[in-house]
Length: 240
Image 1 (cartoon, rainbow, N blue to C red):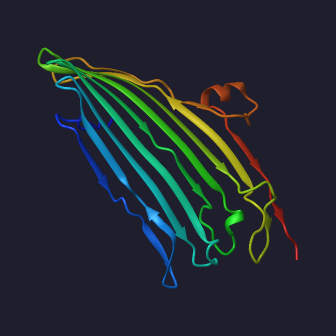
Image 2 (image 1 turned 30 degrees about the vertical axis):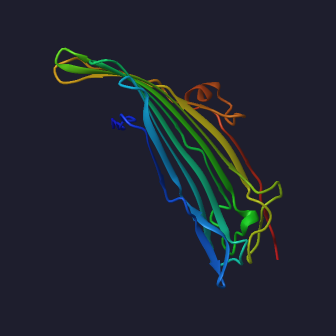
Image 3 (image 1 turned 90 degrees about the vertical axis):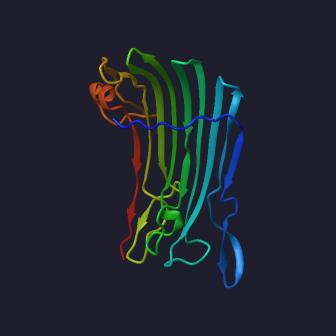
């Protein structure tokens, strides 16, 4: 198990802004839109002095990756993402601290890996949403530290196509739209308690639950164990 601890807001309010300016795309000595952008913002401080602290960070990602085998501007894979983290620390006493965190990180990629044989309309799209919330209680007990935590996580992912047309395979390059779509979601809610040296330790982790819109397996038992997901495929082969 890996445990990561972040700093709390601090005794004074502070804010940071990094990389606010984008990288521009230059073509034939002319500026044509953005190539990528990764601004980051952090703010933190005391909501109640010596009692309640806040810290939050927000990062945005815009990245456009060109393919040299296709003409501009229909040669780029476009990725957008947001990464947000919020933490509250409440000091109950000199022996006990309560911490709550929330992590949200959606992202979307359109036109995945276009090339000469698979131009933009043929490529798939990818979208995911990840949410995680944690409540952690730290309590000093005898000569050790009791950590009790409850966390909930949800993950949704969708692989789609640019349209509903059939995918046509030809020796000179594929046509139509991507042949498959898939949607899947998973959630998890572990609860753990652990202590420092010389004290007891206990762990309890709930299983991962996977859900989706439509099942594909005929066995109800398999639905309960591994969850459900939805897929569809379509393609056509052109003959010369």
